[in-house]
Length: 318
Image 1 (cartoon, rainbow, N blue to C red):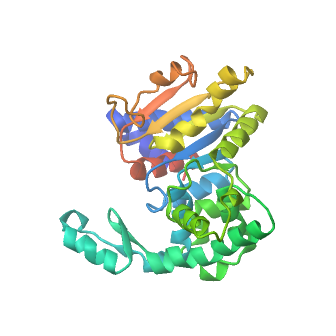
Image 2 (image 1 turned 90 degrees about the horizontal axis):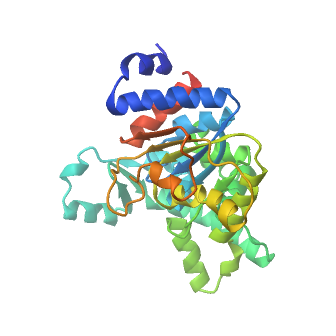
């Protein structure tokens, strides 16, 4: 039985039913020539979402991605240091002293898995700092993800891969030069490292372009599209709100005629609350000029690490 058959047969009501309806609708949308713009918040890369996302990229279903700085770098960390990650199955029972011991071992915990600092952060730091300094010396400025693409396409890291490269969504994106937007990149381990080198006077801050450059590129990219775009939001936060705002920017600030997002789905454990974004219902976005009344809208209030692979598996008919 395929994922699609399983979901169609067993996912009938509540969040399961919403997933089935969203999956069926998205599959129809894609079969009609549409593409997905995906946003990634939370620790999706450390959850190894790349195992199901990379095939979606290679299949041509993903038109662009907006992600946090953490999701950008943590896919790469897993690629080169997978064998040194430490699983913590009893993470709910850890004391503060237990977590302090993990810190002493240079293990940075994300719920039930620890990222090894030496094998992941420092291994990548050596290579990417060289890229930054080389660009700085040549008066070249790049967007944060472009340095990651440079590292991956140069194949300098290839001998150090520990995870299956087919499971890396970032590698799949680099290989196709997929449009990628990383607002707030500074809020990440490598973003902190870059800032440290700037403070020490070793690299100029202008070597990395900022979020305004990302928004300019996103606006130009969106305006150039001739196909319909689905907005698939995993989590919320800056990774989700930054790109969806490009439509009111073009409409209201530049007074240009562009279509609204053609399809919308959010996968989040957040519920509607006072002033909250991640759990805000889609209709609220109508008031901001981001979605239309008739836009197909789905809300799956569940764990994205469970839902997203099922959704992608349904689309790919695995």
